[in-house]
Amino acid sequence: MKINFHVLDGIKIGGIENLALTLSSEKISKEQNYLINLNKKINNYSTFFSKNNKYKNLKIISCDRKKGILIIPLLIKLFLKNKPHKVIIYFNNITSLWVVLGAKISGINNLAICIQNSFKKISNNNLKLIFLMRVFNILNVKLVPCSKAIRDSFLNFNKKIKFCNVIPNCINVKIFQNEVQKNKKLRKINSSKTIIMVARLDEIKDQETLLKAYAKINKKCNLILVGDGNKRLYLEGIASELGLNIDKIFVGSKLDIPEFLAQADIFAFSTTLAEGFGIALIEAMAAKLPIIASDVPACREVLDNGKAGILIPLGRVDLWINALNQIISSPTKRNYYIEKSMNNLKKYDVSIVKNKWNSLFKE
Image (cartoon, rainbow, N blue to C red; front, side):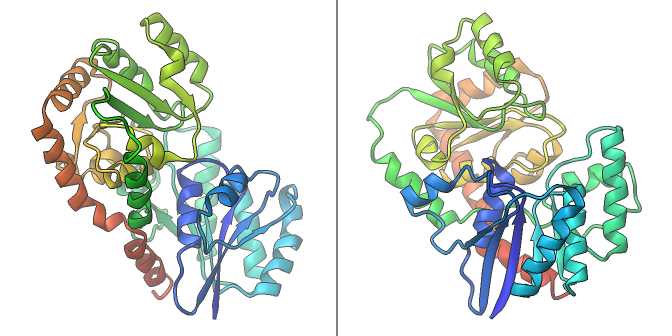
């Protein structure tokens, strides 16, 4: 039986965490996957797991958080006890280096780091990140970008970084669709059309453009923004100035995403050039929702260059209004984009993506 470790520094609510949970809970013959939580004080899913019996095969090893290099002895003890065949790290910072060093000292060489965020701009932190990635190259750690957009954002700045092939983020399509369908049965018949966006309320996203477009058509439909972040107060201020109902629009972070998608008719994903992947787009495809998104490299990639969803140039409120109006009023267009996105969804299923991870470590 091969042991695999999937390492998170706290189980928060987000796309990276969902990826780790999905991959580590996937049952495969002759393999045992463990989710290693380096900070047991952060586990935002704990109550949700027990209540909903989600991720049935998930096995978690939680640790008391140690600061800096002091985490290495803890990791060495953990690695020597369990002897994992491979280790996948779902964050890319100095703590990743301590995990790598702990693994190397323990004799583990099958190491990979998921690269989930784009290189945005030149700054001290990003320069340190580039240096760190070069160190990982020297240590033969596999750097795995989840999109071409992320890989290219780094290579445009430093062509010396060595990346592995892109392995996209994924969901368990069948389980996700079953959850959506179960909740769809509870939806009221002839309810108003609802637009939904699931994303953090931070600088990487662009809910502001969506709010401005919605303000022009709000009598025709509803808008729900699922997520939280440091821009929430700012965005609530924008919504208030536009005369929108803040309490109905902003619902905060939620774990039961299938339930919310089941109540929606259109998925909107207004974001920026800093977008790395957008796992919410995959979930929207699985929920059989027509998608309208910003025309940035990451969305373009996931939505097959606009074949699986409508792409809107950055900041174009007028085009958002036009696209939303068209999708709201035309069942034919909704069905067209749903069909296209469903065809595009297959490559993001966990069974396909898991095989790519297994192939990566055979190279």
